[in-house]
Length: 201
Image (cartoon, rainbow, N blue to C red):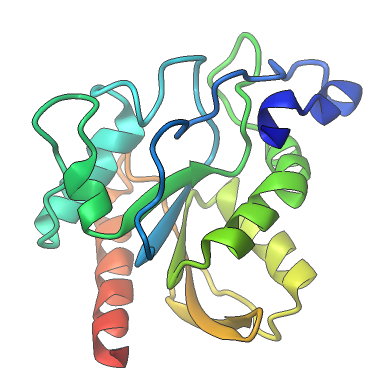
C-alpha cells in the first residue's frame, strides 16, 4: 500500500508515471521461503510486465535460462506462476514505476526508488540469494544498497558473493539482463549461484 500511494518520484523525476496503481506482483504472495529473489529494472508499461504478459522479454529470457538449469517455470497459462513459486523463486523490480514515453530505464530513478522501497522489501522477504538482472541499472543499485547495508564486501559483477545482511549470510549476484544477447553470461552466472547454494546446504 505504501508503494501504491508513493509519489516521491514526481518531485524529483517528472517523467516518472507515478503512482503506479497496482504494483507487480500484486495478489501473488511470495513463497514461504525464497531461494532466489530476482530483481528486474522496472515494469516497462502499466499492466504489461513480467507477471501479466507471456511475451514479456524478461520473463521469456529468465524462464528459458531457468529451464536450461533444470527449473522449468512455465505454468499452464499466462497467469500461472505455480512452478516459479514452487521452485522458491520470486521477482520484484528495483523501480516500481515506468517512465512516461519510453521503455528505457533510468539508473537515477532506480537508485532513488530502491532506497525507499526495494531495500525494505529485501529485508522483509529475507531471501537466501538476491540476483540483480541488469549490468547498467540493477548493478549500480546493488552497489548502492550494499553500501547502505554495510555488508562489508563489494559485489564483483558476475560472481556469486556471500554477504552478511541483518545477521544472515546470503548471496548477491549481479548479472546481465537475460535478453539482447546476454543470455549465455546470465545462464553461466546463475548456474554458479545455484551450485553454490546447493553446496552450502
